Length: 139
Length: 139
Image (cartoon, rainbow over all chains, first blue to last red; front, top):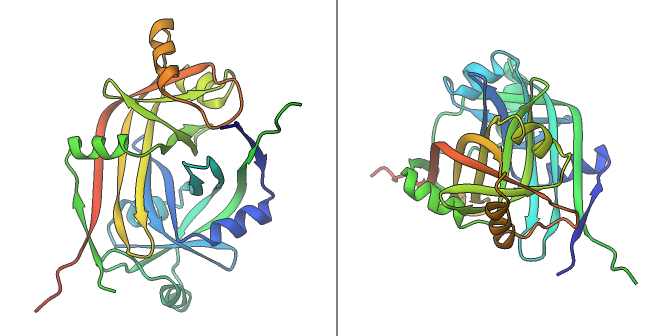
């Protein structure tokens, strides 16, 4: 199989792809160590929206402290070695406004059977993404 | 659809699952910001092995400085809302021994058509994982 090249995505294309997939990974720093959690998400009003229970690391630490996080989404096919990945970096915040929180909750159903009372938004500040494309064959 | 519960995986089960999938995500801190890169990997001698080009952030900064990284792998089905995720935390290091590096290179073919001269190992120190299982229906 020929190799692949990395083709950079525009910010608009990257965000569109991120919104097209139900699952991403929140990346943060905890006790000076890198940490990561898979979560399901939506994109609403140009922000990434996720839900979490009260008292979790994501709601009680990361979002409560308005920490900077990265959010990664990919669709990569190991057979074909094609696909794409997008990483958004931005501040995570608890959605405090009750009406806004209720609206997001109506749009986003958590997978896990637990009270997911906290709604967290990530405002994209840095958006990067790439697509794997077949490398040109010399000749 | 009923909700899901999180069932913790044993370290042995988590590592076995991580080794069964060709693709994971290296999570690290750069300039005090969380960062993440999807990579293809293998597990050899109980270590996660990846390849990178000379001069990339992963080889020239993360592994060269022997930084602590997290490595995340998941298989999550958005339709069924079932699957699992594993996170390993450990020190990333360049594989310096030429024979060892050559052996790992023979086992691990990079996807991207670039010189991938650097071999990086991550020695698992903390291993966590969960599986989504159907929540018991009351009654």
